[in-house]
Length: 190
Image (cartoon, rainbow, N blue to C red; front, side, top):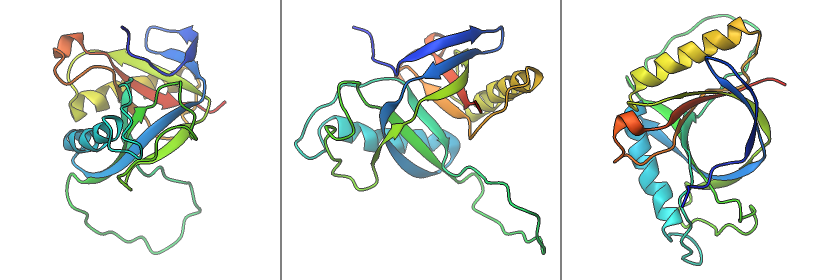
């Protein structure tokens, strides 16, 4: 049986990416602070608890794909002011949002409420997205390299990103890296 994924229409395929139009879909997500390569494990445990029955009603929810990870804060352009200040943060520590797609059979109203207050249920609105697919490692270096390639191709083709890139994983951590389906998803301005 195939794993359920959000519905989308392929608008165009190039050598570097695929343009997609996603329908709205529901997600359960959690913010986790830490190293890029370690936050996924912590967030996965929290979200897996929710779908395995740690929710009001104890309902088990089937696993879907992808599991996605993105930076929690996306900057907003403001006018320049003075002075410019600098402070040090803990090296290698950022906040990420990790999401599980919820099965289509649920609406936001029919999803069981999480017992863990860190989990947020929300609707991901319809969007146009550029997707770059690759297999292999889930390392931050590989993600950043594929993201750089995708952003360069979008700039070359005159497409403008809207928001942070999303790192999407479609396979279990037990899958051999060469058989993994990974994607960088960049939301685009319409």
